[in-house]
Amino acid sequence: MKKLLAIMSAAFVTASAMAQVNIIPKPASLQVGNGTFTITPSTKISLSTAGLNRQAAFFNDYLQKFYGFKLPLAQGSKAGKNSIVLGYNKLNGSKPGAYSLEVNNHGVTIGGDNAAGVFYGIQTLIQLLPAQPSKELAIQQVSIVDSPRFAYRGMMLDVGRHFFPVKDVKKFIDFLALHKINNFHWHLTEDQGWRIEIKKYPKLTQVGGCRNGTIIGHHPGTGNDDTKDCGYYTQAQVKEIVKYAADRFITVIPEIELPGHSSAAIAAYPKLSCFPDEPTEIAKGVTWAGPKTGKQVQQSWGVYSDVYCPSEYTFKFLQDVMDEVVQLFPSKYIHIGGDECPKDAWKKSEFCQKLIKDKNLKDEHGLQSYFIGRIEKYLNSKGRNIIGWDEILEGGLAPNATVMSWRGEQGGIEAARQKHKVIMTPTTYVYFDYAQKKNEDSLVIGGYLPLKTVYNYNPLPAELTPEEQQYIIGAQANVWTEYIANAGKLQYMIFPRMTALSEVLWSKQDDKNYEDFKTRLAEQFKRYDLWKVKYGQIGDE
Image (cartoon, rainbow, N blue to C red; front, side, top):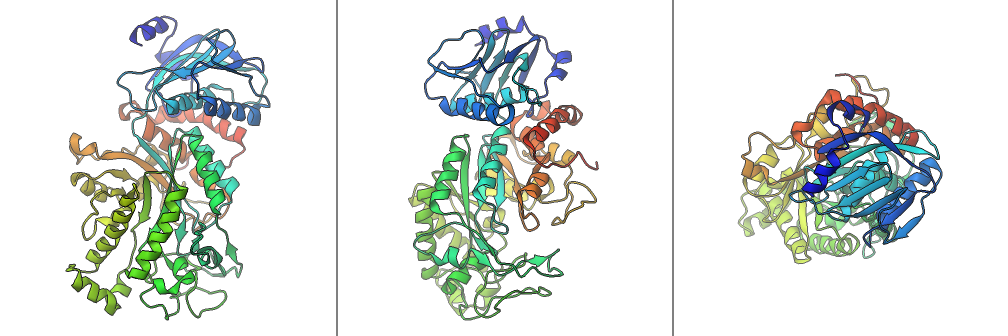
């Protein structure tokens, strides 16, 4: 490989010519040549290694959608003139997902150290294409060797508060793929909606998948829209989405929230509550639509005290749910939430207080740890590991848990020091429901997260030693949807911040430069226009 790079470097220059090529995330090594190669409908895709059809199909689908043509495919072909050759190339010392890409007078060669590496090479090739539709696509001659900084590169979408149809979820996954993001965290259950079909418990979607109305404006709102808000994914649709993501080398990690944020499940099956006969709490100042008696799906945002009761009935229910979930999602991780679980009901419950005593637990935080530990043990028996929000540290961390640190980085720091894997996702850097500019013209939850802040994030805390930093497996951004009700608003909230995130997760920290990034982003804005998506601007800084 070193000999090959030495030969290639003779035909390429660096530094001054680099400005001509605007690739995000920034590659580890980029050399730019003087000429171009033009892709036309007669250019063929040659698979020098079997099993790379998914990569070729993604590129062809992209060409068809945005340029109006596809390329012929040839299996097992050798490199020739006017061809794009896909194959394997062992890149010594690089992390999984590494690739090399060379464009010369005759064509393009992409070599990945594995199948994902070839796919990431395709994403870089897409960024070499002009952002204007044409049947002749001139691309710059380049030589690139690249690999990811972090193994875990994620984005979360909350479909509990607002439901997004399958087509919108697939489009979201496409955006992740185009940014070399490899994990889709799918937040499927909430106080305001249960969004995944569980065949053993049909009321979860029949009852829990619908709320009778939604507040208008900021919580507690200025009124209620009095409109039923319903939606869920059938198991067939879940399988379809999981496969769609897998074809793009993205793992779907489902989140089944527990023990808090469980109002929708409790509305469907009231015995899951410690107080099944008490009506659902309506937050102060909220205008309510429909019945107020019995258990109801929440219509406003926030945190609610009616949480899962740690009873054998509840554990049987959750084990049954997880049995179906693990059949649908091949991910090694199942996210179990664990955040924002008020202890009010547990403090009032005679059953819970007796359980704390019987299990020799310290307090309600210990009870939560017991709850999480039981679910973890069950999922471990199914060959899965859990991820939880950083509140799962309270009362003691479950033995094999990965911590997702959202309330700043301290939870992640603590977990890493305990030798647990950590995914950083602090509000101050990667909550994409926060405002992009100081005066947003649409409703957002609050906060202020400009592009520059996202870009300058380093997920490795300086407080950790190099050995402890090894437990930080990556980071992700979260899109909570209290105030995001449609695909256009979703696009506006993630772009261009997700593009900045991609460089945080992929590129070396020392290679990052915000002014250089903004230069490259100018070309990316043209690509957003090609995709016909809504996006924000660079914003206040």
